[in-house]
Structures are given as C-alpha cells and as structure tokens.
Image 1 (cartoon, helix red, strand yellow):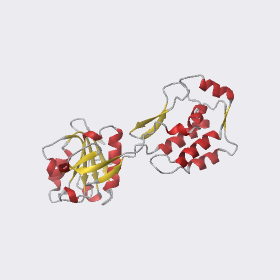
Image 2 (cartoon, one colour):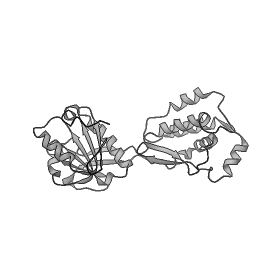
Image 3 (cartoon, one colour):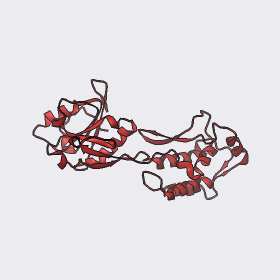
Image 4 (tube, one colour):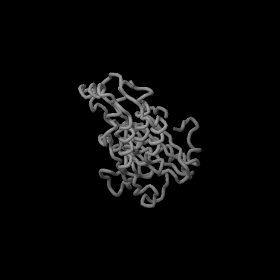
Amino acid sequence: EFELRSHGRVHLWRSESGGDTGTLSQVLAFIDAERLLAQTVVLTTIESPLTDSPLAGLNVELGTARGWQDEVRKQLGRVLKFYDPSGVKAPKRGESWIEQRLLELSVEPYPTANDIQLVTRVAAAFSISHAVRSRIASNPLLRNGFAWRLSAQGPHLRRPSTAPVLGAEILLHFAVPEWIRGLAKPKTVVIRPFNLGNSAGTVPLYRVSDFKGLEAEVVVLVMRGRLPNQREATYVGISRARALLFIVADPTAASTLPRAFVWD
C-alpha cells in the first residue's frame, strides 16, 4: 500500500493465473467493510467484449461475517489467560478439550446450527460462581454488554464499558444460542457489464478503454497477461481512481508494473 498524489491509497493484490475471481472476492469484501462498495467500479484490461469476460455476471460473496471462528476461539481462549478469571472454573476435561472442540467449528462464513450448539456447550462447560453471576446481572454495563462489530479485519466482539473484562462475561455471552445476534449474514454482489445497467447489489464492470476520461472514488483494476498496449492500459487504469485503487494482477501482468509497487 502506498499514497497517491491525491492522498488516496493503492492496494496491490497478486493473483494466480486465471485465479483472479477468488482474489477479487477478497478485495470487494474489504471494500464493503469500508462501506465504499456503492462507489466502486471494476476495470479489466482485457479488450474482448464485456459479455465474454470471465468477470461478467460473477457472483461475489462478500463474506461479511467471515472470520467469526477466530474471534470465538480468541475470546474463549482469553477467559482464564487474559481476562479476570474471578469466580470461574475451567471444565474438568481441561483446556485441551476446549481447544479441540473449537477446532470442530465449520469454515462456513456464518455459524451453522451445529456451530451455535458447539459454542454454547463449550461455554456452559465452565462453572461460574453465584456471586459473580449476580454481580454481572446487577450491572447494566456488564449484563449483555458484548455486541458484534464489523471492521475491515472481520467481526469482533466489543462492549461499551471500559472496565476490565470478566471471563464470566464472555462465558455468559456464549452460553446461549443468541450469541450470534448482531453477526451480519454474508451477502453477495454481482459484477455486471456497465452497459446492462447498474442496480442495488451490482458492481459495474468496464474495459479500461470504456472508462477512459471517467473517474470513480474506488477502482478495482484487474490485469491479466501482457497486452500490446500494456503501458497505456496500465496508465489509464491506475489514473481513474479518486480515493482508492486496487490492482489485482496475475504474475505476467504484475511483472509489467513499476518495481516501486509493494504487494499486499
């Protein structure tokens, strides 16, 4: 990532040959987390008709909740090692049992019914003293204080109180199936040729030559191979973004870019 003259940002993503659709999904998910998807266009250096482009009509899962597994494992792992363990006792089966159970979580972008049950079972396996339960229940800042928040890095649990976190708070949050409340479900967008019209849930696709003289706040430039007019196409593509530019390039296309570029 480096700064543009306009004080915008550039992100460079290297993709495998023909594998840019998967990389593009990650890029659009990143943009969506920044709430800039409505201001985004996708440019391709391939000059064939847009309807023949492998990107045309591509359904991209934004993976809004993707990464929830890491947050669940992190939070439950902190109960005894990082957070205040007052009034909490680990399951008799030990910490290794907890770790093994949490490794059984699915890789789905949103918790399945089995995931929900598994997490509640792990949290309920801890014991919490009556005194600590009462302390949490009587404090509105601690009672049901945790909520899911989405950032560019993925979903995270946060609570408004700045008081030290009690391990029991985490356990009580995860001990009921409602722990998923507020965790946004994944959504998809369709990359659609610009000449077919744009609507909610779509991102317009242009050839670089179609977008010459135009600008957008956020531009995703997808580069494949080497073109006869590579230098011109690259210059036009990278100069279309006002604020954010993402370059997704395969190894051949990447070799034509300035060496000063640093890849994410």
